[in-house]
Length: 209
Image (cartoon, rainbow, N blue to C red; front, side, top):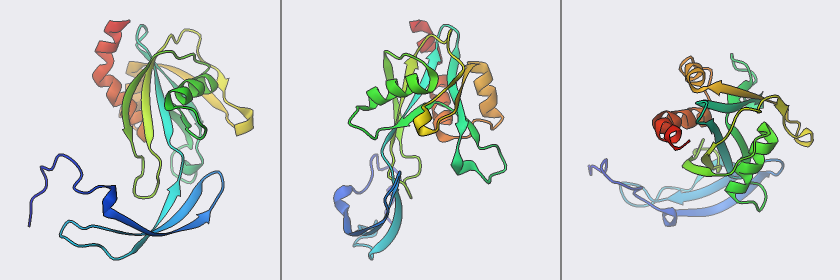
């Protein structure tokens, strides 16, 4: 057996997949496809044709709003249908976020969503990591940003009525946000990634203010 554990990059590329057929299962706010495909295998040769259902979503952005002078993060609380039926509340506290479903750039979407969801004007955006939330079943890729803001006048309820948004803005001292994370109350991927990133970069960001 060949040990490839030290390989610095993926072993295969997009040219190592053959898309045999794509079935449209549903077209709506989100699309669903059944993709029939073959791919190269690590032990040589090709797989048999396999079928996988994929949730086809636009890419998204998330924005961590951080006030370095007050050492506070601005996060939003809203209802999430995907959590209904779980033991916990379906109202989640998350960074500002939105889909890139127009011809806007990711940066433009980040600034627009910060205004719509939190009433916050954003200038400079610091690029953070991008990630796939659920690559086994969804095409969505999320680009994260950090925005250095003044949180003094932020709060209240925001969101677009046309999108049925009912969004409560929280201004949280970093210590309180970290306490919520450690207690398991911030258990969505975007919040976790953003706050772990901020824990690493916080001192340098505060030194800039």
